[in-house]
Length: 138
Image 1 (cartoon, rainbow, N blue to C red):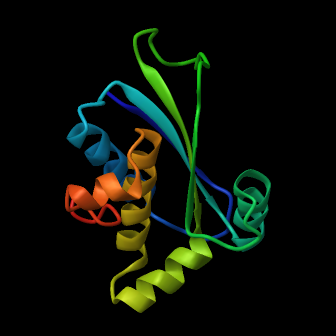
Image 2: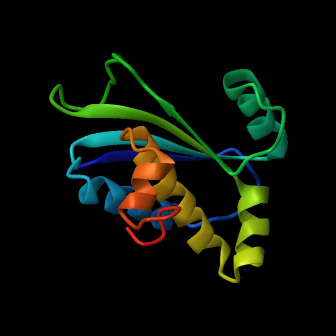
């Protein structure tokens, strides 16, 4: 069973269940059901700061994934693995949902799945080769 935590760093109301379900689905597809991760919703200022500090790109982005390496994670059994953190910009997700003609929860679920696959080590090319695009068909 996966251990997924959700943190909303914004004042926006979203369905945590939809996001956790998207991560669980991606983990199951990759046979990583004994893995944990954190999903963190942030605004444009925070995602831009993280993108500048860690990717050296001074711009707003939709999702960033940060792998944890070699850390013990309290609360998970010893044979389980904590994968890392997924930061999602709620403002960018909202504008992308409008652009692509679907709801905010669907866009957030796509971004969570995409971020989860990155935590598992998949590149954009590997996702594309499997026909998963941004994670919407997992």
